[in-house]
Image 1 (tube, one colour):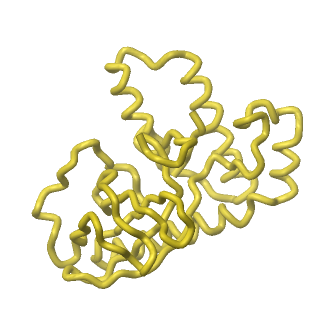
Image 2 (tube, one colour):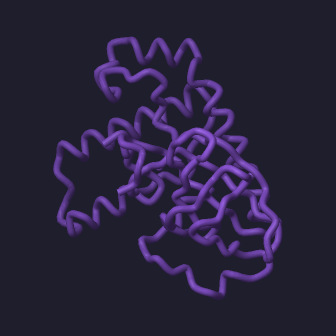
Length: 210
């Protein structure tokens, strides 16, 4: 999952509020409710979205006084396996943010392309904060906790009624996406195989999705 400063599989996300009741069965979605607290830490505030693999919720992290996005994966074995694959890749990406080659890139002649002229630690890849397993009525669900992000680029395209996003925004989104791809490929040895508007998320600097 890429991010831009302008937050599995984000691929099939939609702006619809309703993923349908049929998915709430053994092996499927977990019924999350506003007001619940997960892992003794994450207080559910609102629903952010859903996809074929999971639902995503805005939560308040009670241990750190911040907002986070909690992704609750479906419980069937192949969804669990996909979740742990995602966790492994995100963990690998996170631990290389201080790699000397990347720090040199941030401080080099291309530093003006980075947010805030070389914002420390920016990789263009969403940050996994935590993960845990939750046992519910439909089985065992892997839950992943991310920094909060804004809408995906498809939502941005829709915002401009499919008539074209302003060029300055296109340049910024493209630049930050390329920064993320460079980081993944050159520094982490990871190839992103599903790059499309739904999988590129715009940042929300204030930490609250809009």
